[in-house]
Length: 174
Image: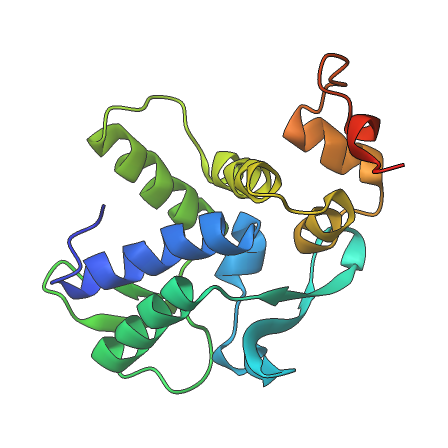
């Protein structure tokens, strides 16, 4: 976990939270504008994200992720423009936005700090998908979250295997 008592730690927490909580791709995160964070249907979302293949999707923001975003924006005094900005060694916010490679570096550094080698930003995206499925998430809804055009792509992400011993059609109630 990043040290959230520092400005850099607050930013790095938001990066990790958005990757694992909203299943964003690195470039989607790097290009995320504050204006994208909106309320729709009574909840906070990342509205109209343009993803891979120029597909547009809206992603719900879990409450814990939104709280991290608010803490970062307040501390960094960010009101508009890019959400993520570089932080100097002295702890000052620069006008520079973060590149997708800077995000990759932050994830790699964070994973090494907890003893995990060869773990990248895309692994957090897969982790989100697997946690959603493990907690009863509908495959089609996970597909929408990830912005996949094909359910087969989502199944590959999840490493889905057919379970014969406990088959899904055993409990039809008929």
